Every structure is written in C-alpha cells, then in structure tokens.
Length: 338
Image (cartoon, rainbow, N blue to C red; front, side):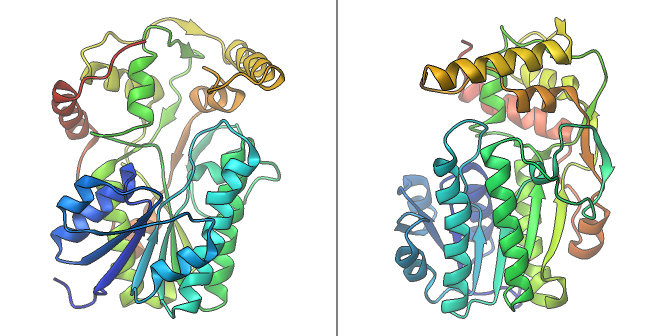
C-alpha cells in the first residue's frame, strides 16, 4: 500500500452504488475503512468494513463518526429529480455542512466531495465545456439547487484551510446501478427518442468513477495546492444519447428505441405531469419531467483534461467493455420490464 495513503478512511453513503465501489477498491488496497450510513449493509460487513449508523443531518452523529479519521470521501446524497426541497436540503446541504464541520473539529486534513455536472446545467447544450463554466442563475430541480449550495460551501471550506477536491462524475452506470440502468430497462416499452438530433453525452462507468475518487485523494495528499479545485470525470468518449440508452437495452437483450417525439412535446408532457403530481399529491415520481426532457434532448459532455493533468485520471474501463460487463451481470440479476 502506498505510504502516502492515510490509514483510516471514512466513506459517507458507503452502501450506495458509488460509495460501495470506492470502498471495495480501498479495501483491496489494504486500507482501514469505515462506512457512515443510515443503514447497515451485510456485503460491507463481509469486506471487513466497520459500519457506523447515523443520519447526515445529525451534527453530533457526523462529528463522532469522523473522529480519528485521516480522510473522508463524502459521497452520500439524495439523488433524483422529484421530492420536496426539505428532502433534498437535509442530506445534501445540511449533511455536507456537518461533514465540513466534523472535518474541522476532528482536524481531518483531506475531504473528497462527490458533486454533479448538473450544478452547471442550464437546459441547453453543453459541448466540451470545462470547469471554468459558471453556475447558472437558476437551478431546475431541488437536487441541482442543493448540490450547488453544497459544492459552493465545500469550495469555501477549502479557502478556510480544509484540503478538498470536488469531483463531478457524469451519469454513473454499470453492474449494480440502482438508477440509470433499471430506469431505462423498466421503461423500455414506453421510451421514445426525444428529438431527432444525434446529441452527444459522455457518461462514466462505475469502476472509473471509483478510481477517480481514490486518485483524487492520493494527489491531494501529495499536492495540497490542488485543494478547492473541481474536476469533471467521464469516459472521455462522447457518444449519441440514444446509442448509450440502446446500449443499455442491448445488454438486457431488449430492442432499441426507434419511436421519436419532438423535445417540446416531451417537455410539455413533463410539465403537465409535474403539475398533476403536485396538485393531486400523487405519490412517487412522474414518468417524465421538464428537467429530464431537457437532459434527453441536449448534448452534455465535458473537457476532462484538468482531471487527466492534475489527477492522472484516465478511464481504465471502456464503454464497450462496460456494456459487456453489464450484460454479464444482467444475466444473473435480470430487471423486469414494466
């Protein structure tokens, strides 16, 4: 194990998709790893991970959990595009504030924070943009609004002496994905192409996302002058949005999406569904929202040259290899179509 690595590592949200992938790699490196989550996970027990149960919005619980740690990966967050502001604010903003406070209180030098490219999404095309792109004046969802606030506060903490690196992984997917992959597969019979453009998107395979986080921690330890910097991370290979979606469907042995609707039509459907769900307080999430319609109808891919230069990041698992691994996993873990 590299001597530059700290000996005690805590991951928030280690039971989640990305958190668990990071933990697996840390354990493989021989690190002492703790998980802080609301629940306990048997597969983390099997890895020898020590688990602390608590809520990110509980300031004392977070402070106690981080006691004695050398580095923190703050991965936990409430994702998605639907829910009340308070549901997103507590874990995403208050939770991040508590992590920052606990790092300072416990004299923890290094914090790796998982953000999202959605914090700079305007609803328009983003093609090859880099980290200099400013935050938009308005956020489109509670998720993006709260992640923006949290990211800004982590950057501010860096100015006050906490060594931090912020990563923006884009659309993480792969075996075990609880978000993108099951959503595409479950809704495959009802999916339509949004617009008739070959709008490009760059995603990130789960192992590559985990690698980037561990690289960030290593480089931050070696070079504290990187503190406060933000990095996009991805496959570094933009492909048409519908090639990506059809690639997931192909991995599940499902036919590709061929039917097309204009972006404005899908956006209007999303607006109507949002209104109905809000007025009638329908439980669950609408099948379409304005934000998702904009995402599906636009290009969003990023210049990751900063992550390559500063972190030494390059994706080790290609998109093609990722689809192959996903297909193998789906054979053993089939997802039912609605």
